[in-house]
Amino acid sequence: MKTIGLIGGMSWESTITYYKIVNEEAQKRLGGIHSAKILMHSFDFEEIAALQRAGDWNGCNEVLGRAGEGLAKAGADFLVICTNTMQLCAAAVEKRAGVPVLHMAAPLGAAIREAGLNRVGLLGTRFTMERADVLRARLKAGFDLDVFSPEGADADEVHRVIYEELCCGRLIDSSRARFGAIIARLVARGAEGVILGCTEIPLLVKPEDSPVPLFDTTAIHAHAAVELSLS
Image (cartoon, rainbow, N blue to C red):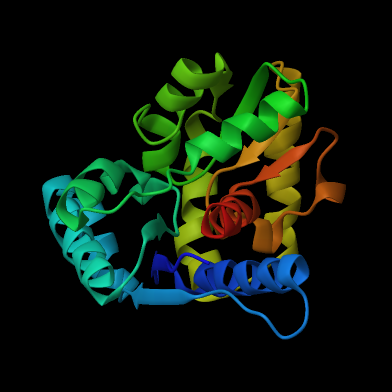
């Protein structure tokens, strides 16, 4: 079993889910009282969010790179960045740490293609929805997927709920209803499925809230980490 290095705390709410899924899946596959070999660096998310707000992506590369380097020195065989937006830092982290980073887009694209879909909506932070280099470009290049996001007030609301509610552990029914309406509008624009492209969104939005398949990036990424660990 390879040792997984988790770069988490962005937010800690979703990092809990990563830790839980990885250990549950390892036990399921290996049986008995097995669990996963994990090292973790958990950030104070406000420090990362401040860099995001300032558009200081070089600063993000630096701090995540240091975290990845520390995990590699401690014995991690590969790294998992436990957040969608900060997949932006994957190449920089991998270069500095000297061990592979399991990018979220690879297992996500494979899951969407396995479902037979071509055009999907993407919900996430404003950075994830607007910047192609978070997920969209890799999903297009690697899997020829057409990925699009909400616009205008819908995009603003998704971003607001993530930072003001979900990252603070607040799950509000009215926000769940608004996400359902936003998903319906994506479906009206041709979405055959919807990517829950923020690791906190699956805490709020469930399959019954959508008329089309949902792709939970947290679960998909965490299962892929176990697959790589046991390969």
